[in-house]
Length: 45
Image (cartoon, rainbow, N blue to C red; front, side):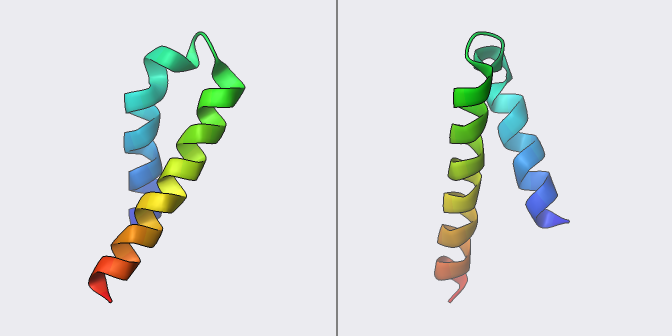
C-alpha cells in the first residue's frame, strides 16, 4: 500500500513533464520511486 502511495505522489509531481516527455519521465519517476523506497528501508535499518 505504501509503495502505491509513493508512486501516486511521484506521478502527481511529474505530471506536467509527462505531457512533453512521457516515457522518459515516467521511467525516471519509477527509478526515483525505487531509490526513495530503498533509501527509506536503509534509513529504517
